[in-house]
Each structure stands twice: as C-alpha cells, then as structure tokens.
Image 1 (cartoon, rainbow, N blue to C red):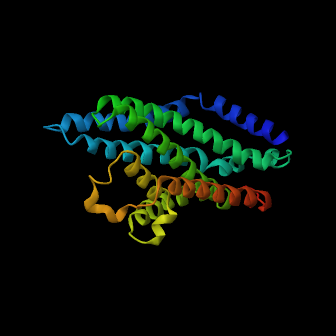
Image 2: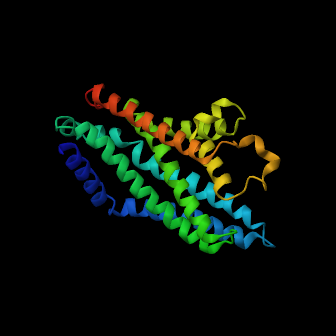
Image 3: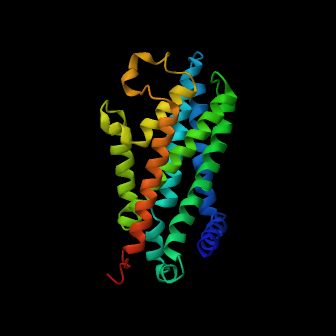
Length: 256
C-alpha cells in the first residue's frame, strides 16, 4: 500500500501545482490550438469539403499534436526538474519513492493531457461537420488515450535514461521515428505508435475503402491486434523505465 499511497500523493501534488497560472495557461493553449485551427480552416474554405476530411484534420490536430505536446511537457522533464530543484534526494530516500515519482507523474500527465485533448475534441467536433459527430468524438477520444499512453511511456523512459536531454530526445523521437518512420511502408513502422493508432482510425470510422488509393500506409489486421500492440508497447517501455530508475544513480549539475 505504501506505493499506492505515494503515487496518490504525487498525483495530488501535481494537481495542486497544475492550478498555477503558467500551467493553466499551457492547458488552455493546448485546448485552443486545434479549436482555433478549425475555425481558421472553416473561414478559409470557399465551399464545404468532404466531411471525412474533417476526421483527418481532428486526428492530426488533437490525437497526434495535442496529446504529444501534453505528454511531452509533463513527462519528459519529470526527473530533470527534481534534480534541478534539488528535491531528488528526498524522493530517492522515501520507500518506493522513485517508482512513485515515475508512475505518479505518468498518471498525472495522462489526466492533464487527456482533459485538454478531450475538451478540445468536444469543441472542435461541434465546430466542423464530420460524418457522425458522436462516433467521431468517441473514436478520437479513445485513440487520444492510446496515443498518450504509448508516447508517454517512451518519454518516461527517456526522462529516466537521459534526464538532462530528455526533452530534446523526446522531440527527436516523435518527429523522426514516430512520424517519419511511421509512414515508411516497411516492417519498422509496426514499432511506432502512430501506425497502430492510424490503422485503428481507418477501421473504426470505416475509412479504408474511401482512402484505398494509399492503402500501403495501413494494415489489414483486426483492431484487437493493433490494440494489443499498443498495450505491449506501453508496458515494455514502462517496465524498462521502472527497472532503470531503480538502478541508476542520479546527480545534479551542481554535484556532477
């Protein structure tokens, strides 16, 4: 129970910190970015587009960009901030303190990020005209959750393995590996979060026949296989981060 209580304490602490004006401003910025983009696109269009195009717009603005940015801001600097503020020694000497920090910050990042993503999704869906508003919302909401879980797990490992460079490496991973490699029609793209999330989008919203001319970027496997791959991907990186944070010795810049 000590680990559960410690994780709960971390989440409560982060909740209190999230009410600071800087974090509130960041949250509202994450919500506003896709909503403003949808409004600009609607104003710029001279005629209504194919409703299915709105699905891809919302997918990349919210499921991809907003969730990535939210997890990046919350998870990547998790260990570095403790070292910078010289609070790591207090965390490391508590029972299960390191593990509580890792899991607590990861869980809080999910809560904070998904609250922004789902709010932005609710507003954006109401402003555009996808084929089925309710179905589009819940599919993109679920995909946002899996997107945040998978990428957040990678960011958590980078935060533990390279605390001083975690933010930069997380950006490189997302831009180069997850996005660029995710579009390569080869076996390697199966190891990216984006590929599986994209395949689930196509299957759950019946877009496969409509987008058939670029079929090479998708997969015919059933949805449960993509879901399993995302769960395994998340679990593997969290386990690696769990083991890594338990064995690594961290030093602050003042000490090093």
